[in-house]
Length: 199
Image (cartoon, rainbow, N blue to C red; front, side, top):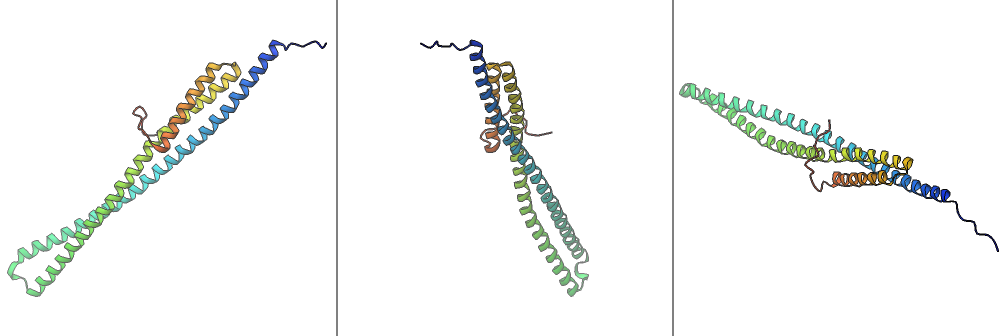
């Protein structure tokens, strides 16, 4: 009868450790994937925020130009009105008619610029709201990146120290980061403790 060989307890412990290390290494790779997704989301949010800010600034500059033109036409119209009042009956009828025609034209231009600036203002405010929305998303990605970097370090420490506690802590950090990433993309809730600007 063949003699049964009992496994060496040290070898069993080593194999168990190798299994733990492999599992932690695979999960750490998943953390790295999540980190890439967070970085992508953060970069996209920052880019969209800057673009919306630039477009909004352009619209406000255009709005200011319309306001200036509106005031110029209003000033010209008021000057002609004052001139007609001052000169009264002494003005020739054909000159009065010409001045009244100019006054009407200036009034129409003033009104046109006033209407145009309203549409531009709406567009500028819409772009500002878009900028603010991207600005709200950005910090979630930023904090998720930080948590995932810490999670990667903690999981690496858990392999070296064969510490399940360190690994458990890394999992908690990664889950929190994943929640922040989802919230960054979907903006389900506003977390009051997270500042909404990146410096």
